[in-house]
Length: 508
Image (cartoon, rainbow, N blue to C red; front, top):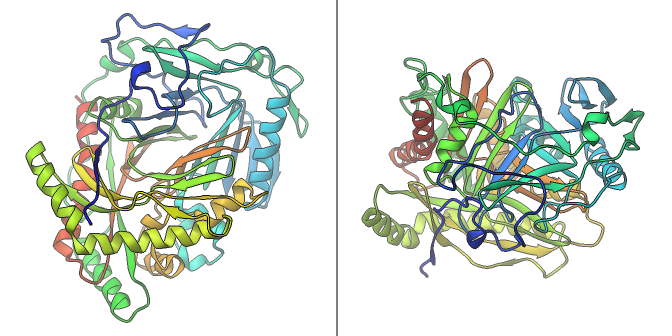
């Protein structure tokens, strides 16, 4: 069987002709005009607003909506193993706190969205079906998985994570990019909005103004060095030495040959310094083609920049799907891409690796879906992304009645393509071999709306840019019994290439 070949490479820039399938009409009302449709799009500086996010679909099968910007959170929820679950205002005033990190966060997300929805005023600006404001923007670290899987040896470095286990921003309004303009969506809450003694401030009840960002915000920056000297460039170095990577590879091979696991996704973190703005990296990356599930997400002291090709989950009502990716080939030009596509479609190792993960995802969905509803179609398409080809499948099903968002995430998180098979045992083995936490890498970033619909990417091809100019990048790959360490190292290099290219463009 040869996989069908699809290409996702053209960024959606708000052109209604290329809008995702559920975009309905051009905006009326508040919008941010730009001088010329040929000007590059612009983004506001999000550094003062934790929980702010941009979700930008690149290509015909990315986020199922036009590019959206949420930059005015009215409340922020954090989950941290040291402080539990906390809800606070954007100014840092604590509204509620609970030691529980498993059930309480999702109860509070539901409650806050319900309260904001009930207190909204005016006529909502609806340009597309989903997300429906109010909306919760969510960044969930890989280490949050320890609350769903209570085996601490799966996450031995979780106490070293530098980002919150989960951060959520609650937004009543946002902006969607259509017709080369930022168009208002949603509607602000009224002054009656309250929750656990919190009452909304007057500023958050006003209709927001569209972002109008001048070119000088970006182009007046000084040129900057990308990485500090000798740090994070020579692979497979980074935070794991070449010999340590070799030892980890050999350890996984021993587990494979005695039958403990069938596959494990070994990752490496690369630390460096970067002096330009993460918004600039995001813009440059989109100008170079981005990827289908691009996302920019602001935390308290860092910004996540993601050019992920992979959908972790999409839930519309009781319909749910995931798009696991496994199997990779690098290419540099069109001729090389066609040859690599033929090779990947017929590669026995990559196909076997991919089927293992598809079976794992089918099993995970089977825990929460109606019996007999889980299907796979298509299976093992060859898809093209900036500088890489992947094998991709779509696994979908129908949720059982009354399955909650927390139960969905508990069944699927972390994604099978970034752990291994069987999932729990491979996570235990990887926890003993990887010497740094993954953070947002291999976690999930996306949104949950007031109706319970949600969409998350799986943050691979993702970097965390800290305010003190540090940057953390990751790369990894699935290791099976017939893997060659030289091929795995080459794959690490290929997966870092696009982010490094965007950083170089942003630093000049």
